[in-house]
Image 1: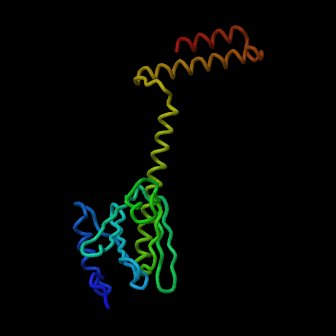
Image 2 (image 1 turned 90 degrees about the vertical axis):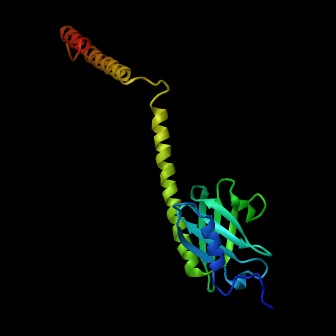
Image 3 (image 1 turned 90 degrees about the horizontal axis):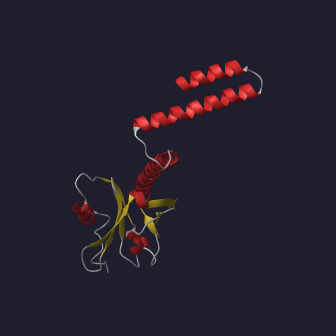
Length: 202
């Protein structure tokens, strides 16, 4: 006998309506994938949706309604896709405590969705990959900026003070260079004194 709570046919009218009801202003639905019936004999069917801001997983409840889980794109660390003959498996791993833990084993941040429709799963996977690459680049740029900030020194100086310190450092370096020339007997004492006077007065 057909499960009265199953989604009608392959239609996704109800889950998509539920999904759209939880979208925030400005958020758009980009792709979704539904689990094939044959892979959901022992549990409720799953729908995975990729939006402009997150990945959303909807699972039909036993009696009515849906359970909605969310994974922010910045928390997604890895996504893999395996395409079979009659379905595709999408595996996700998140790096922080997210709703993903409620979908997999207790305390796990890795979950696999089996038997998704292939074309739909591939569309969701492409968006996941694009978001993953975009956030990796954002993190790389932020790390470079933090590294530059740390390499700038601990003391924070005003523009004038910083310019003065840079000038003093350059003068010391030039004086040391002149002294090395004198020690190597490449210039005379008189030439060294003239160079030193010019550096000090500049």
